[in-house]
Image (cartoon, rainbow, N blue to C red; front, side, top):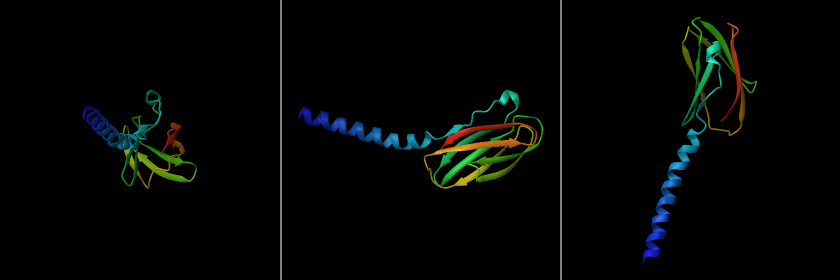
Length: 118
C-alpha cells in the first residue's frame, strides 16, 4: 500500500513538473537584445505571446530618430522614435525555433545587431 502511495505521489509531482515546464519553455524565448544603452544604442525587448511576437524598440538618446529594423535580411520594418521613446513592432506567427539575425540601424548613427532565437 505504501509503495502505491509513493508511486502515486511521484506521478503527481511529475505531472505538475510537466505542466509547469511547457509554459516555461515558451517564455524562455523572451528576452532583450544586447544593447549598449550607455552609448545611446537602441534596445529591442521581445515578448512572445500566443499568435506572435512583440518587439519593443527603445531609443536611448534624447533626440528623435528614424530606424530600420531588419531580421534575416527579408523582414524589414521602419521605426520612428522620439527622444527616449519606444515603439512596438508586431510579428504574427509561431516560433520557428531558429536564430534570427537582427539589425537595427538609426539615422542618428546609432545601431545594434544580435542573434535572437525564436
